[in-house]
Image 1 (cartoon, one colour):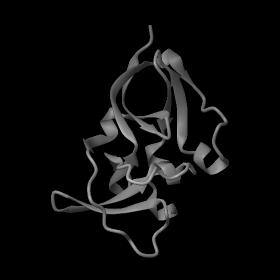
Image 2 (cartoon, rainbow, N blue to C red):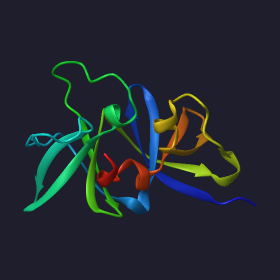
Image 3 (cartoon, rainbow, N blue to C red):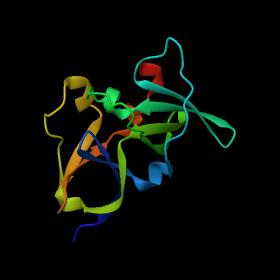
Image 4 (cartoon, rainbow, N blue to C red):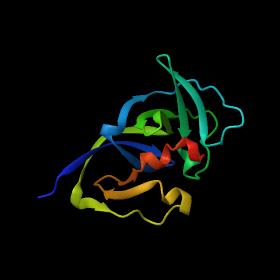
Length: 144
């Protein structure tokens, strides 16, 4: 008998991604960001989260995908990472989904080598292919 894992799911460039719900602190609508001069283009900026300064990482840029359309506002998935709290900028929040352990497969070779390291694996669900984001790798700001 296999177990299940809950994931916070979201869309980035039409692809369905998931983060283990235990790593998610909260999900927020678009927040105003402060630009960080000379920072990597992957850094979306800094946001004030109830008095705490939180770095944001634009997952489109981190994955080597095209930028959002002009005027499209991202959502924030705030995760607890090794380096502290980090917000991931995503296109749309889908909700919490359950995936069975027996549905897990290795990641498909659909991204370049750098982006490939950000995907832990996939779950084939009824409504989508869920790409499990390696939050430790995706949020490692010191490597950007």
